[in-house]
Length: 147
Image (cartoon, rainbow, N blue to C red):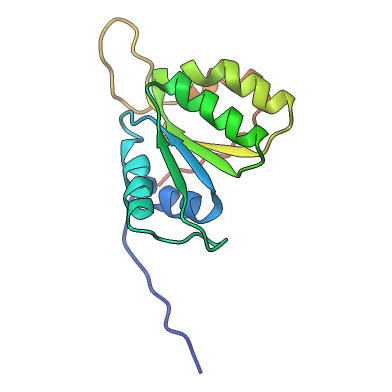
């Protein structure tokens, strides 16, 4: 008996959302372009009752800011939950203080980052790695993918 494989066409944000949903118990979100669609997919699947690989629905908590999302990730990790978040640009910079704590405490988590230019004097939504490179010294392991 062969099982038919199901393939979908999707962008990098949706692919990352699929994987993160399956391996997370908690997702602390604060939508920021261009990573917003990852959080939106995860929120939609949780609202529909979709189960992850642990047979549970992911608890999605939308926070008031990126800093709040990072704090929620840290607290959730301290409580023992597999936790993730989605961010980009200045949002990632606001998470750096918590990233030092998370890395220093050796807590396992994933920050899904859609790399984007840091806005200096005006809004800038171009893709580059300024935001990610700002986090090199935090102690987080960084895995990158391009599509």
